[in-house]
Amino acid sequence: MDIQQTMIAMGRAARKASRAMAKANTAAKNRALQLIAAGIRRDAALLAAANRKDLDAARANGLAPALVDRLTLSEKAIATMAEGLEQIASLPDPIGEITNMKFRPTGIQVGQMRVPLGVIGIIYEARPNVTVDAAGLCIKSGNATILRGGSEAIHCNQALAALVKEGLAGAGLPADAVQIVKTTDRAAVGALITMPEYVDVIVPRGGKGLIERLMKESKVPMIKHLDGICHVYIDDKADIAKALPVAFNAKCHRYGTCNTMETLLVARAIAPAVLPELARLYAEKDVELRCDPEAREILSGYPKLAAATEEDWRTEYLDAILSVKIVSGVDEAIDHINTWSSQHTDSIVTEDYSHAMQFLREVDSASVMVNASTRFADGFEYGLGAEIGISNDKLHARGPVGLDGLTSVKYVVLGHGEVRV
Image 1 (cartoon, helix red, strand yellow):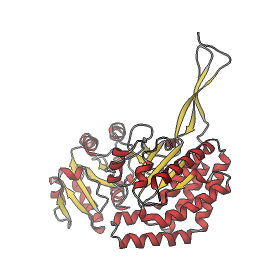
Image 2: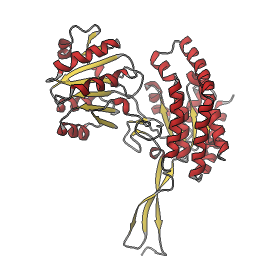
Image 3: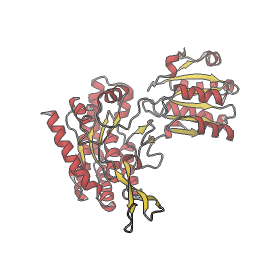
Image 4: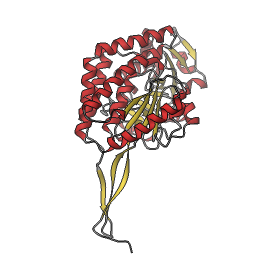
């Protein structure tokens, strides 16, 4: 296989398909989504079998537990994929919406129309659900997409790709609107990210190494995030009955996700009351705690206790490890977060309205929360139907990227024969 020529052919086909998708009507796009969802439910057993092949190979190859977790498609996860597509279908179609229409003194009207981005290249590792989420969002937003999944999920991705093509064909939409790169050769990624004539945006979903490589090599603009160094701050005005489940869930619900808490900050006044209770919960999950001196003193009997270093504050563990720091109050918590966070998701637990509003205003992250687990930072949970990724960039899209994040705007002008003088 000549990978460069193969990718160019895919790019040309995607560009052609993107023009058809840009003018596709809402009914056809929704029909495709509903057909794909129905196919996923119909073939749930086949998808599970394909996933088992990928899991067997992953374990045989010594894939890290966090990546195996991301790779796993449970019965619930398969149902959630179908539900996500149906939720996308139920959302308003953003394409063609005209907003901000204003009359100018000359008599013309000026506004903005929402339009697709065009062709979106999506590169991801170990997450077969991304195949469906990305396809669904791109279809509804009138884009074409080229998907390059990781070799770890090759069997499941191919099975899902067949269902996507079946749904597109059933709705009368071009089959090339969603294409899956079949080779696992890394050269395909190099080709995809250097074809600005065919690809308008790259969305990478993977480890730090992948993102860093793409930042160096890509000739195509990206929607990305590097790390998910998320914080929960337990304020001195927190309700401990809320703080315990929030801080436990944020860390222990799943370790291998970008919205998992990696650093716990606790106000000095409440630390002696809340930390021992949390430690009992973390001990049940065998979580290692890396603490500053004050927290180590409070938790001196904890079975897996280590001294935190500066490196811990900047580390995304993706594992059963949590760094813990005592702070004087909300000001120091905000300063620590803005210094060390990856601007992904950060949460405060407090009953003090002023502290909550200060935290929302001053923490410079894509998602900022009050009295809620960071695990809610997710397109499905935010009502976007699904997400194509979570961006901690500030330009174009920030936070979970749903339909609006896959669109742009163009100016439209309505006149009545006016000429400029």
